[in-house]
Image (tube, rainbow, N blue to C red; front, side, top):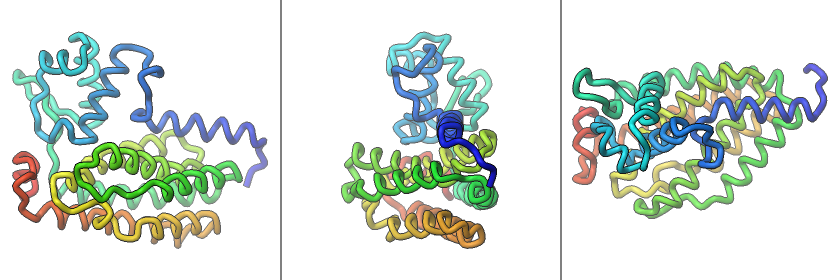
Length: 264
């Protein structure tokens, strides 16, 4: 492994994560009104506060976010490029639809990409990367998994720390482009995980012994065991996707019509 100063590695790891994680921006970090509009819209789409296929009417968004037409249009166009929003010709904009076929495609793509990134991280990652993984795992493992489907705040906190942990695993790869692609796939996957909020199954029952899965993944990386890390990541992602798909197929009155129709 190339010899680098601890400070250089720390800065590079921090910068790569910031480039890969647009959804972590805070209001204070928004440089423009368009940045603020982008952050608010993306967060509402990923958390399914704006449901799949929902119409995005500019006038309603102006009221919702207290923002003007120009920053909202710019944000919507940027979200089109990310695949979270679609243009409907003269009808305006809508949240991108979801489907079981896309969930399967997303999962395959994540398995292939993240297996390659983990190998890169194992080859190039340093002590700073290892410390980041352990810190992220510690915070996640100390965050209670919500047992109440109506606990939106608790669910959001757990999901945020879960996202940070998964990013910490690949952060050592040294490639901002690979991290950016991984972050985009993970963001799209997040919408599918939110399907559980429309069912009566608590998150704690759905995610199996997730702490054990995360601990094993981290240990494989610390041991520099690329084949085992890739295998564990594949099992983790595929098992999660299968659980979401199984839950999605269960008819529940609370499931939004757009999601139910897309899943058939």
